[in-house]
View 1 (tube, helix red, strand yellow):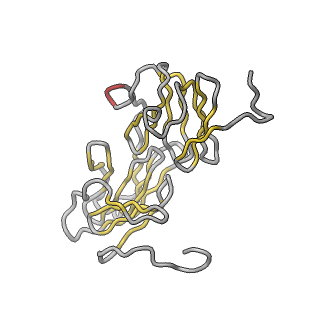
View 2: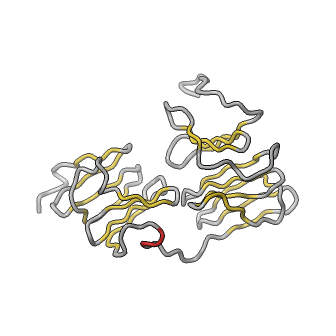
View 3: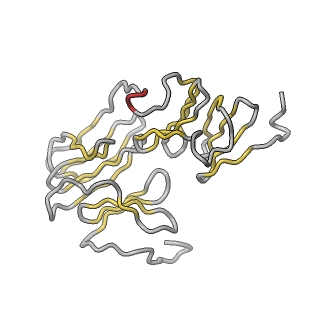
Length: 221
C-alpha cells in the first residue's frame, strides 16, 4: 500500500505467505518452509536455511524480538527461533502456535491452540566477549539503536555492532570515515552518533556515516 493504492512488489510461489514487519525496516515473509527478508525497492532475499519442519506444515506466526531474534510458530510442530548456529526449537505447552508478542521486560508471550498462553523468559545474564564474536574484551562505551542493534566501543579505539545475533567490526570497514573511536550514543530517531579520539563526531543514518561538523551547539573545546 503506497499513497492510498496497492501495488504489486513481487510474487512468491506458495499457497500462502505470512508477512511480519522487520525491526530494521522492511518485512519478513514466510512462504512454505522458506523465510525471506524484503526491503523497500529490493527483491526478497532468502534468509538463512529453510525451517526444519515437515512438508505441508503451515507457519502461523512470525515475530522479531528486540534482540533481533526471529521467532516462527507453526500449526503442529511448535515454536522455532533463529540463533547464530541455526534454527532452534523452543519448548511450549502445545505444538500448535497461534500468536507471538513481547512485553516491556523482554518476555515473549506465545498463544497456543490448546495449551493456553506461554511466557518465555530471556536469560538473566548473557556474557559477550571474544568467544561470542565481539572483537575486543575491554568495552568503554555502549548503546542500543532504534532498530535494536547494539553498538560497542573498545578501549583499543575500535567500533563494533551487533545485529541479528552477530557482531561485526564497523571501524574496520571501508565505509568508516573516521579514525579511532572514543564513544557512541543513539538517538530516538534512529541516528547513531560516534565520537572519535581526534575530536570529530560522525552520525550514522540510513546506513551511511557522515561528519556532524561544527555548529553553535558543538564547539571545539
